[in-house]
Image 1 (cartoon, each protein chain N blue to C red):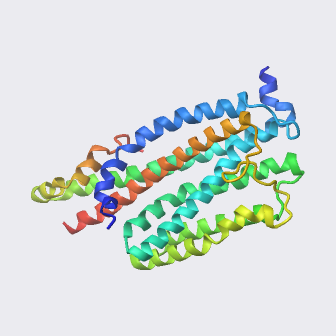
Image 2 (tube, each protein chain N blue to C red; image 1 turned 120 degrees about the horizontal axis):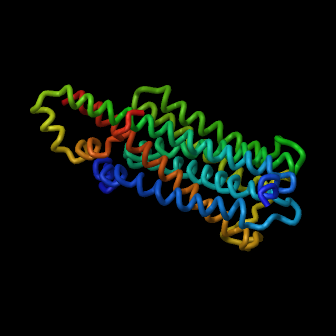
Length: 235
Length: 77
């Protein structure tokens, strides 16, 4: 099972893909930045500060998405005993963590002109901070532990426990009275954001997704070459 | 016009710093990952160079090994 996920087969694709992904990322990011900074309209209440949304929201979405994927892969590595699942999960973590930090910092910058404070111990912000702690623990565990079986077990537990926080982040604005506004973009219900703002938001989300794909591919290649380096010692 | 873009009715400092932080984070992460990748690729070719000819031949029969050598980042970072 999962023979198509064999590292040697995947490497033939992942080793060539980064240069193409990088090229597409630069194009999409350039379009997104022009749209977000110059072409999209200002908000009637928040004025130009609304432009921070174009970096804050995609970062938050992607950091949540990546952590959920890491948890799913961790469950997969437990069930199917496939080590490549944990290698993919490990390679996803750096970009997920950086997007989590970007969401926190840009949220804080947005909070100052909007709420009058850089930080509030509000349910959404605090749960995002907890997610960053889980990301840190996950990345640190890979660095601290040497034994392969042990590190896969520990990182999987961190990811599976940490993913409980993901629905808490998503629904925190509905469950508690928070400073953070409710979601304006919904898949299942009506989206309240105007198309003139939705389009740049989606373009920036595409650009950020391409960046996380690029980082994932490069990190995954690094991990595979590390394994190959150990293999050369045994030749 | 340019002043309007930079100042953004008093919100420029917040908007530009949020975008700058994002782009600087991207550049830093990309550079760190690329340096690590180059390091491992260089380590691989250095290790391969230390092997005797017969072992090099065996190593080069594997497509993954050939791919690593072909995609090696040539610039010394």
